[in-house]
Image (cartoon, rainbow, N blue to C red; front, side, top):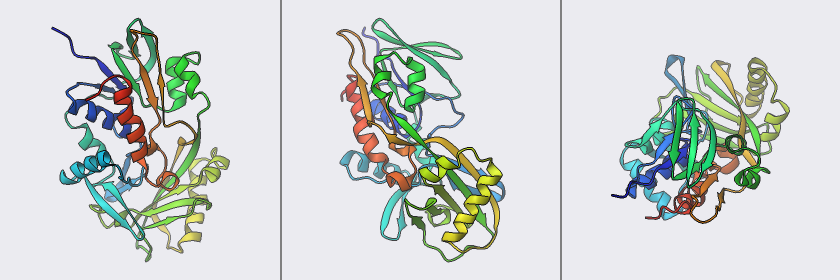
Length: 319
């Protein structure tokens, strides 16, 4: 009896989850490994005192290709997603939070959380993945971690590492703020050249409580030159910039978050390592969902279409 193909996926963000979902739908049983307590990567939601809630990572996603439209339609039918109307544009958000998308995609999948992968090594016809709990063997391996982390796992001399060595990441400061009384504002503000390049009124998203909450994401340039600020200083500066854009009353709650590698500066969407005959391939892709929405306009779709969907085929697992 032929044993099932052992498939490992490092990273349970949008790309890893969607890829695993596609493989599972094709009859495979992939194993996802993620170092975090939660899943979803940049499909992240922060909860704070007084039932405040902030989508501080990916702001929304769009769908143009048939495959991704079907995926979002399924998530919408399952009440995990809804359309968000932002004046002249419409996107899709998770309901009641962005990480609801990740939870819906993860349903039925095998995921090992809080599992730190320390190294990846070719062992003949398989891949050996070392973690803090031991070693796992896979016939196929997909890595969705950022390029620097992928290189650390494989080693700088590995052929795949050399393909992605030029990838650089840009930082992003994100401010989460709640007001006692909300000013009359549009759902979003977007100016890529401004210090705060993206501002979203969270309470305008479907399924959210009317808590007058906002998320502001700074531009890569502003984030880079202020990268070493402590949180109180970053909060003061970003609140000042926020008031320049929207004259508003003092906040009742605010906190910043710094993401050192939020946006790829220049990168291929995916890279595949071609190995000699009888050896198994390993593939890597950066997920578009990791970039702030103002930078990629919520385009998780191209990364999924060209990396996640393609990687399932690149590792020899076609439906």
